Image 1 (tube, rainbow, N blue to C red):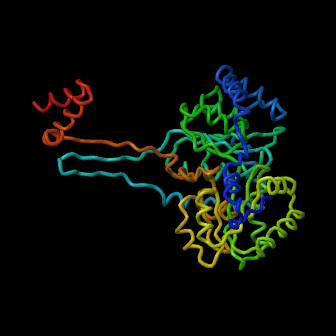
Image 2: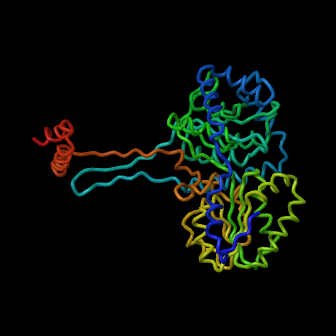
Image 3: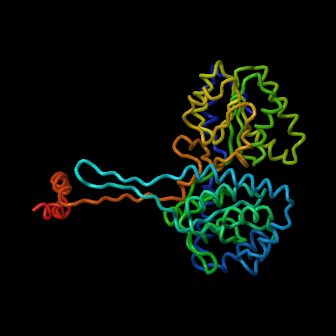
Length: 426
């Protein structure tokens, strides 16, 4: 774990190294992914079965999960867990329904009518991880905004190591409006959703997190289909003053570290004693975690505690980090948040851990990673909508603005463009 102090002469170089740290790359798997995509395009379902046998250790007789299997999985879940799933689904749906935009119609002074119409995608593919952990929350976060947007078909691919399906993932799919579920994963699942096979019809956009192979597959199929983003390892920045409980902050840091060894957790504080107390609390808490090997590796390789002179420095550093998750645990978190320009999602106050956002708060937990919050946003209904602009003009409107169009077309040397307007003017 790195200790940085803005008072140190070498701080700027150390912080720049932290910013540039490469925690995961897909470059090494590009060739393998290209081969997988080519095999799926050439051999369809047969290649999917072969890759499932190779990577998941079993050979599926039926790629699609049946309605009976979905119902049986839901029936096997404890009522209190189903209630938690329902609470999360309801809150996620309410927040995303509030995002739905209105169409625009504008009658301008020249006499034209201008407009913009929103419309849902036809089909969306959802990738759900199934390796180190199964994430029903990812199903809700990806599928519910698509359903709210009005997408007619939502298919889901989930890896099934040894042929086992996670019942809670299937229950989440059923509640979130997923229309098709397939027991395939990896780059081969992404290729199948992009190009289509005998069992899996092609989609228009693929969303959802995955490992390096999944991320690289999404990169390679982009253009054939849309994608949400190339997701990297999870990350959090915590701004905390000395009035916090060190144990709370330590667990907030470890909540990200336990995702995988490449995750990153950073504490920024203005109190040296508090920084030391949190570092000690992290070491103590690691001993209690079932996933302590993963969390410890993440904290040792990528964790950092940054000591600042004041909160203005903390804000400036946070904007440079542009974190996926940001927790602000100070006396006036809203005031600090008002100065933050770049963060995927923010959690304000001492009683608002980021984990609330992972499950039940309502805003989406699919967020930009690797400093891409500088230019990207989290998943929303807008990822499942398209904008179509339109123009209606009568003769008077054409006369008002047409001559300018003719002049510009002639200046660009596009004669037919200009004539298509000029002929109507005469």
